[in-house]
Image (cartoon, rainbow, N blue to C red; front, side, top):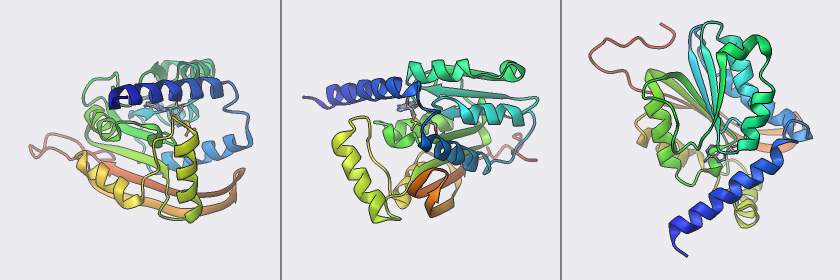
Length: 237
Ligand SMILES: C[S@@+](CC[C@H](N)C(=O)[O-])C[C@H]1O[C@@H](n2cnc3c(N)ncnc32)[C@H](O)[C@@H]1O
């Protein structure tokens, strides 16, 4: 079996897995945890009312709804590889925010937006499913404006043995799971994609919080370098 066949089969499995999960995604005990992690991620951004945000691997779109409500003159968009997740997200768009929200079915490796379109890109609980993570990071950088902000929320296998073992178990039994990255590796990958100001904003274990028994988390923030011609405005200026 060649690598590309193996990858495509796993990507298909990934899509099917999330298609099946989509209808129930907001109704498990763990859903509270996912919402908490999305809000923690959004807290890392310097909000500008006319900003434009993209959530990569948005699931049922909770973070996109929250973002749209914080961007009264801006826009919040989400992409996800699972059509059922995108369908669930679209069905939940609040009427009053509909003009400022958009969801598209797409993979992180081929983001269907132009270069320099967004002020913010977030990615929560999704990066460990990407078969071409470096390409996905390159895409996130491409669609961000100069000075634009990236925030990634992931599990941290270097913070606890439990998460390290859980990663191995998932790799064996869940074909759509690629891997959790130790924090030093994820930070290096973000730098390698051409981001500046790469900072590990949150790095901690959480015990019995928001419906989750235990979790080790890392939240990274980074920026697209501002071009030296001085014509580009930094976010928050
Ligand atoms: C655990 S859910 C996280 C959803 C949401 N971001 C959250 O924090 O609750 C992972 C999501 O990533 C999506 N996903 C997996 N691989 C993807 C890829 N290559 N490109 C885009 N989305 C992907 C799945 O379809 C799923 O909706």
